[in-house]
Length: 393
Image 1 (cartoon, rainbow, N blue to C red):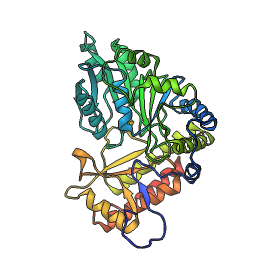
Image 2 (cartoon, helix red, strand yellow):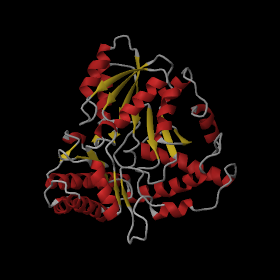
Image 3 (cartoon, rainbow, N blue to C red):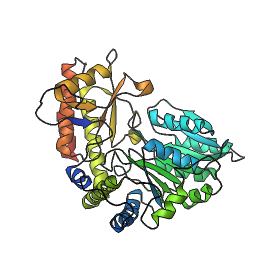
Image 4 (spheres, one colour):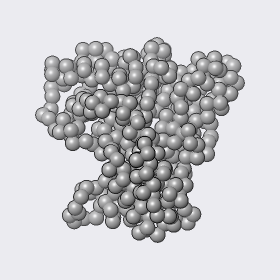
């Protein structure tokens, strides 16, 4: 079933939300293979290659634990494997998903110090350093950071976060949500001293939803030996023990792993640096279009602009739901909704994953046509401005 009106429509339904992203034909074909025996030698050989190659995307030499699940599950796995009830964690409320992760930590019995923000930039490294310096007794056991906040289109510099923790001389572990940045924005788990990186399959990795990841440092593995929060399905130890032989302690999503193999091959063929540059170009071109339309970006801090998603503020008196419905019904294109306190006020343009210049231009043309058809006050010329930005980069 399609989200668009019933009856045949020529062309394709463009899903330009910031994830799940469009799955490439190569990945779809790879996943359409017969089911593998998940206890057999063919599967073990597949997984040995994947265990080695997925580390390259995280830029780590440490284990990457893979689960059937969503990024939300990977959030929980990071917390329950390393922390105990009553432990304090420091988080920044930079948007909808950062808030949900902090809420989960509270539900698990952790004490969350949530730093409020205006949802218009990434986390403030100076504020982080100040709060850690005040924590002279080192009650804070972990810092939770969202690398790319999908609801606002703002990133946080993880290198700056690590530098702030180091300047404060604080032993807190660093946990990073990289769900909408991994394989789209340069990410360096080892270099930035991240203890647990959380990721999912449905964004830059170009797969359907269903796989999630924890990249785990030596310090996090050590913490897991004494962590007191209840865990069973999410426990790292049994998974890593079985992974050493190419297997899992439960039935794994075999065909998603076939798709992951193809997706990694595609990323390596293009080159990760080229992938990151492509996303930077598309983010800049999208922002050029928004400026030409005379609309406002939700993210107001240029160093924090996201290469993977642009959140656009609707003019006063306009609702994003009505505008997105016009775009969906008339042009068969889905745009991202405003989430939680941005509901009704912001629409989001996803430009990540298997995405090229022509797809971007078509997406922006659909937005510009939709703005006019929905009667949203704007200026024409956004697509032309995007073309100029692409030519210049």
